[in-house]
Amino acid sequence: MDPTSRCWAQVDLDQIEKNYLSARRRLPPGCRVIPVLKGNAYGLGALPVARLLAGLGAQLLAVATVPEALEIKREVNAGVLVMGMASLDAQEAIRRDVILTAYSPESAWTLSQAADRAGRACRVHIKVNTGLNRLGFDCRDLEGIAAAAALPGLKVEGVFTHLGLHGPERDMAQLAAFERAAEGLAHQTGTPLLVHALDSIGLVRYPQQALGGVRLGAWLYGVHPKDVPPQEDPLALALFARVAQVFTAPAGALVGYDDGHPLERPTRIATLACGYGDGYPRLNGQGWVWLGGGRAPVLGPVCMDQMMVDVTGLGRVEPGDAAQLLGGPIGIDEYASWQGLNRNEALCRLTRRTPRLYLRGGKIIHQEGMGL
Image 1 (cartoon, rainbow, N blue to C red):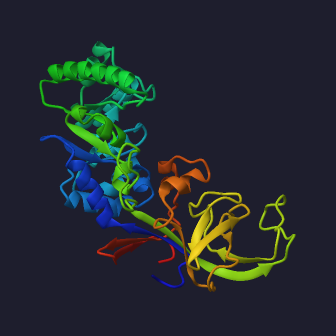
Image 2 (cartoon, rainbow, N blue to C red; image 1 turned 90 degrees about the vertical axis):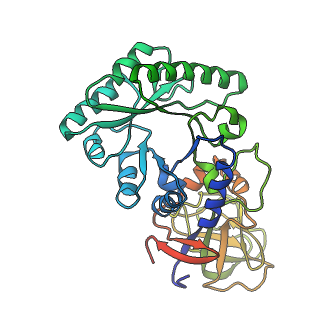
Image 3 (cartoon, helix red, strand yellow; image 1 turned 180 degrees about the horizontal axis):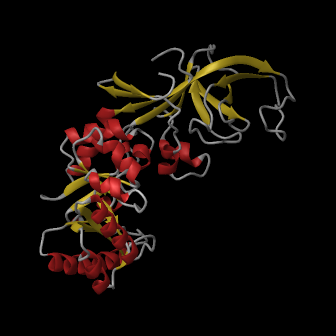
């Protein structure tokens, strides 16, 4: 690692591969894993992860936006599905052979018009709302779904929904409604469709409902569903920061922007070159990092570019030393809980300002990001 780098993330590609293969082993024959790389692969970096998974045989990747899809399509030979809105940039996506989602009569009509302007068919998956009530055709509106699928320029290749995961009874009702809608659409198109409904949690709870594909997001990166037995360090990401300065503040001093918690004793403080501008949560006197051979509690609110920790009583700590902020002794569940975050949200906060080092066999094989 470049010793001048102020903070950085390490992404273990071997662990992502293990997580991908462990999920694939749970699938029935003929069912495919659809890796979800939205949010810059949950903060780990979409392109390196896409290259890895395409090399492992993943034929379809999923993202949330057209720019995310185009970034991957420029370098990776795999299908890419945009699962969200794609109205203003649909024409360019169609030209680049990106698969788009029709989720309403209006969105289907927009894609049909964009296909006409692009001079080629728009590959489409139909999104059906079965109870999550976020996005999709009403699953009961079979005629409306059929009319949208029949619009000129649309080439329907798949149909999907998303479970609310509100309990087995509601989930099974969603799946039953979805299968009725999917069967009706398949009958109308007369062609085989890729049918997918489950995410990482759904795969664990309802493997018998895997259908044609499972969208695997958080699982890939080591954020395993609570139903999965704990595994040894499954997280594929570790976050580090350099010590910028070490000093002692007297009792009664205030740390950072916290004016309500004066220090109760003389305190040895290490300032780390990482903050919420890099993706670390803006904690206020919560959490800890691993530094000097032990736990160093966070002092005061985390700043945009820096944070302070208490290293009183720990081993030797000097400027340039590396503190571990996530991974290893600091699990994602605990890390997210300090600020009341969802685990996926905690990962997605990692900004592109933070350099990422990609490891294979414990060795750096690729680097990306500012400052490298």
